Image (cartoon, rainbow, N blue to C red; front, side):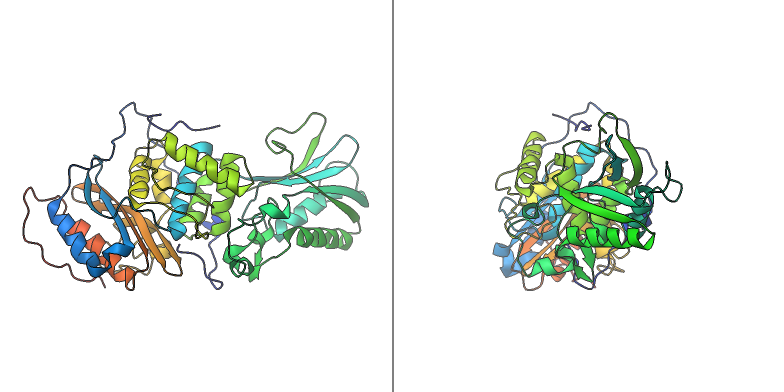
Length: 433
């Protein structure tokens, strides 16, 4: 059920190991009650001259490769550098896909994997892409299929099982580079994904792996399984058909923990699954169009927006810093705002920001999302200041010193809050350590 919205990566390297969603600390605070107060719109006419001067100094001669936007809670554009120029966002794309999933599905939604028995005695295995589904879960499905381990009925030796999975054409966005598909961060996106389809590197054929492991486990327990592949059936997991029996079900961690896996740890597989599940479309092109429509429906500035995946690994994504900053501002007014912010990394403390800006004035005061692919660096999020939150988005496509510039920008935003009422001489901010 869709949650009404008011008024209408750092990419993992092959060696990086994400924290499982089930291991993340859940957020237990309830969302604030809905309000009828209209959300602020971007106000281009009200800026902070001192901050604008500082931003120009921060980017220096690299201004042409940067997009920077700083907003306050009234929607005032306090400072901007090429804020309306579309850029490749890298994993800042996850800010869009996770906001969409949270709004559409809510914070308590769980991805489900089910073993179903039909009236004729045959069985089906269906999934929604749980990133934490592992070997232990597979073993429990085998026990249930063989009527062992407490499952209903007497133990049986032979099982006919249909595994419903997406066609190979839906496993990867078509524009993901072939080299990326071999690494864990580029693993195929499937409904039935043991260990997120990664074992060191990507599992190139997750269906064959699942089939092999299922049959081996059944054989070890004295049974046999004949597996047939079938196409997914719409709503199979949400409304079990009449006269069928659910033999076993595995549920993922709740949505708010999945959001943290996607944003804090920048787990690509999770972000991709959330986009598909929220849209109900496992064709990534159709799911991408659904997100673009959702962004437009929220009244966000979508000029130049192009969505081609949910994680940011695609180099065909385009978004402006104005769009990302406005999305952050809108989500701060969302009934589930607390869950969205809690899903992000924290400067100097947690996730992909744990080693950045430690000991600086923004340590612990900036929650955000990083993004990194070759030639691209982005950081966007919430900076707490004495004058309230600042919604900051910074995207560089070609900077030679992006981390240094981003640190300077965050420090400038903190320094010029509240914005002075008159323009004062601006000294060049120090580089963050």
